[in-house]
Each structure stands twice: as C-alpha cells, then as structure tokens.
Length: 306
Image (cartoon, rainbow, N blue to C red; front, top):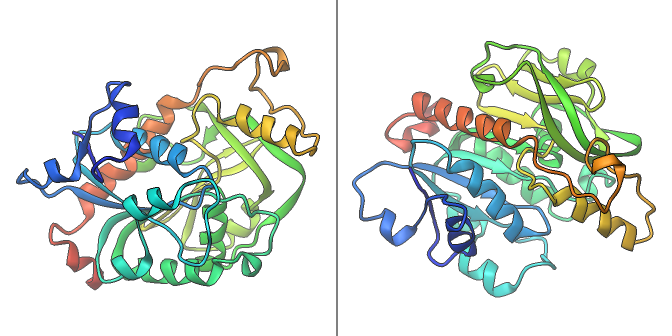
C-alpha cells in the first residue's frame, strides 16, 4: 500500500524513481479506507533527507499510512526553507486536538546539551505528555530515544569519550518479541551519537524491556511492555551515504573526527560503503506498523480512553 503524504512533497518524486509508491493526500482522500495516521516530529537539521528516509521505510507494508509532519514552534530551522515548512509542516497547536495511531520523534544534533538547555525542550515535553492520550504508539529515534526515556522514565544519558559513529553488529535479547519478528540473530545498524544510555538503568525499570543490544554500541532497542513506546538508539533510517556526509561535515568544521567504524571500505573515505542494514530497517518499521494495526482501536478517538 502507498504512503499518503502532503500534495507536492519532494519525496513523492524522489521515491517514485525508486519504485516506492507514494500517494498525494488529495488522491488518498478519494479512497474508502481507514489509513494509519502517523505523525512525524522531525527534529533533524536536513529535514527533506529525513522525510525521504522515513517515508521510504513506512512504505514497505500492505497497510495504507497517512503521514503528517510536525515542527517545533520554538526552534528556527536553518537548513530548510520557510516555504517548505509552511507548505508541509504543522505546529503543535494545529494537531493537539487530534489523535494519531503512531508518532515518530527523530534524532537531533543536541546530544551534548543537557535536556533542559535545548531551546525546544519545554515544547517537546508538552508533545510527549500529549502523546500519552493522543497517540497509540510512539517510536523515538537516537536523541529522541534518549529524550523520551528521560522524560517518561527518568533514565539519564551519559557522555561518551568520543563520538560513536559507524555500522555495528547487533544481537537479539528477546527473539520472540513482535518488534523483532523476522530479524536475523545478528544484524547491522548505523549509529551516530556522542552519548549513551546504560542497560543497568533500564533494567531497574519494571516497565521496559531491552530487545536488542550491540557489544560495541550498547543498548539499541527498548520498549515498554505494552509497546506504547519504542526506543531506537541508532539510525536504521539512514541512507548509505549519510554517515559519509556527516563525516565530511565534521572534517570541514575542523572537529578531526574518527573514521566511522565498519563503514568505508578499507577505512578509506574515498571508497564508498554500501547499505547493509536496509532489510532490518524495513522489518523494524513494518513490525511496528503491524503491531499498531492489530491493536489500535478502529475509532481513533478511543485512544484517549486507553
């Protein structure tokens, strides 16, 4: 089934060239189907690239998915035009009375800041609190996962001695879990972050399960027992060249970054790496959507009663 996105969103044309079916909102409204309503709070600086990445992963399912993009009103984005945000994004006040089957909270390049020093932290807290009664299941990615774990469960993040950047092997902790359906026992995921969460802190919380970990990258997938919240500490949505672009950006800033681990062929930045995590990224998002589809009330406003 196609993903329904706002009319004229750039992703429509970009993903059509990959044979991924994306439907405009005007076309979707003509079909007598109750699509899953997914809200995406896009905190990433390169918003159009993130839109493409997430829509691509949401598309690989037999379910019809209707996407709404959300921005924070308390932060000015510098890498996307005002016209793009005005055309395709809503503010919290626009959607606060609505209910959604799913919410995705992306990462953000603010890991080295304490949470309460992030300029949109109070607005994010308002959205996370709202999600408890207006969203059936929320997926938090990278910094979004750290922020969600801190807000909902008081689990802290800790600075790493150096940036964790690369493609790492992961193992399954609960192979029978519905979010891990179809996963290989060992699989790869990109990570790009300066901070971490600790398994010991999560294990003290009776509401959370650690689904998957990496010997090198640590905790990767965490979920509440009722799957109303899913936390993803890596970046399964990344394209093959995203880590390369981040590495080049850091070099140009004079940060002198380490070469991403297990990424470039022979650790040579001139030798491009292929995507080795796409299959499990599709499985993760597909399993999440399938769980929502099977469990969410058909009348979406009943989410408020759960």
